[in-house]
Image 1: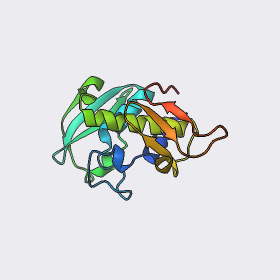
Image 2: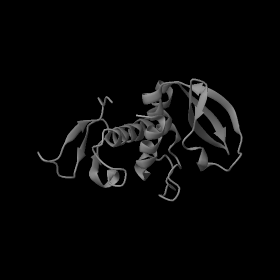
Image 3: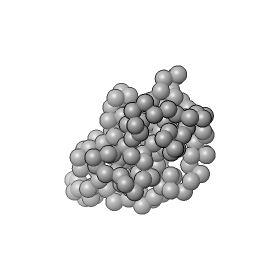
Length: 155
């Protein structure tokens, strides 16, 4: 798996359910996805979680081996400055219940894409998800629907 594969998988499974912003739409998919996206990227690539205020809103991204990885920067005006940038711990970011719920969903959906269990186009339609429990694939398989423990995904 390349970094490009990971980034494409994450972008391919952003939905209103993984967004922190109720204005999310498929035409603006990165809106409200920054914290959960940064957590999933960190799962695979390590590094630090960075946070700053951009256009008066909280924004998260990754710093891996000194390189910035920010899949959601396009939700802000081009050139908008990041103010008061600092690192945050995973435990801090996940201390917010809604963020933890959205992260679990994005993490499970990303893993399903990377493992080839579903395609980017079908992911949202094929998943039924309950935070902290399991993901059920609604598309029929050879032995019926498959389940995946969303808490113990290993790639």
